[in-house]
Length: 277
Image 1 (cartoon, helix red, strand yellow):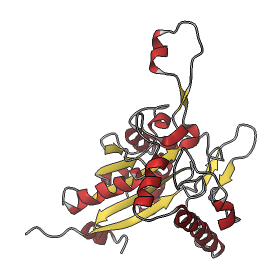
Image 2: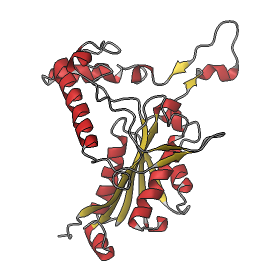
Image 3: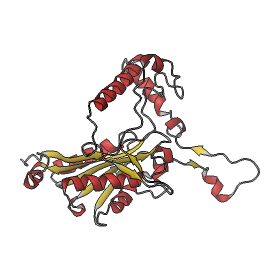
Image 4: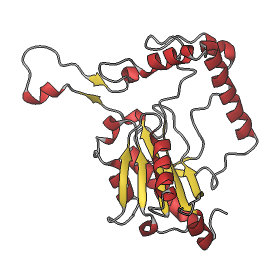
């Protein structure tokens, strides 16, 4: 019987999360991914060439396509990792970054590797408006329609995600009121944790400095999305979105921007290096 390979987290970091159209709106997600890769390796004193596999989650292909369609490769190169590093891009919608971590965990657990990175990066604010494919070959008289890749957040020919989510919620007895209550409690828990100083630069968070053309860099070190003035009454008055039966802008995830990285190792490798234990 093969020896069980325990997996440990030796370093983890994220950027502060920006709101839709906020401070991070012009920064490519690939650049944000490179930032957290560099930081997570720096904190653990691990060299890029020591990481055997990088799994990189990204759920908005329209945004990464502005630079390339292989964001994992581009982000690792921008982070200064050797070109020999093996990287894989994962798109599993909202679960992309968690899927990236899971794949790294499984590779270590299976005994195939001993060091892996799970990364996730998004910038929904940069998602472009696109022209229909036929425009490439010219068009006759008439207006040309732009497609918004974010509108509806559905899959072409299928329901928007909010519609499916609402139907599944009701199937399992989860009402609109239940979702509003969960959203409210989530906002309050964040506000309490923030007031207690639990989000600190150098621990979960890293500081970003955003260059400006004619002024000093913007120092970004606090999440923009939380709404501490949220109330259940305000949430209950929000309209349902895209025809959903339970989902509103208040109880759904925001169209946010940010990146995170988790460095994983086999327990024996971490022990040998004195990391994460």
